Image: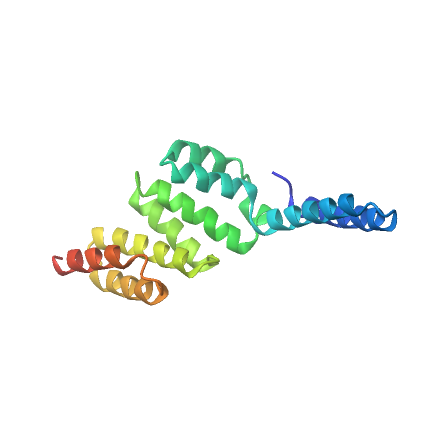
Amino acid sequence: MFPKSIKIVLTIVSLGYAIYQFIEENIGNGIAMIFLAGFFIFLYFKNELILLSFLRLRKQDFNGTQRWLNRIKNPKSALTPKQQGYFYFLHGVIEAQKNLTKAERHFKKAITLGLNMKHDLAMAKLSLAGIVMQKRRKREATTLINEAKKLDKQNMLADQIKLMQQQLKKI
């Protein structure tokens, strides 16, 4: 909702006011202002619209997810590169329900831009592998599954990876 520059300005103003409160010996107010500044810093690195989109996606509300994502008009200027990666990742998840070609394009762009967590990157690669597998591109699917397996250090996607490998043998 707020541009990145406004978030930075709000952070600086909050910190400045916190310092003023400490000088005036209003310690509680100063601490509260530091927390407020921390909140603005958090929103700088984690876009609020993407967070709200993930909440909608958790509830399997694809239309709600799409509505929140549509509020981001120009992702290249409004989001950091990692946030853009999540923006395209979410679009890929939504498009996977309708159009595999668009979903493939979105997942590839998300992987190119990068995602903060290796687990998320593994999920994106695994989703892309599923799309590629449906298009009968076995070699590319195998490569993506192996990359996802390497990224999934905590074995959170182990069952999905095994299932994909079994389906890959049938092709």
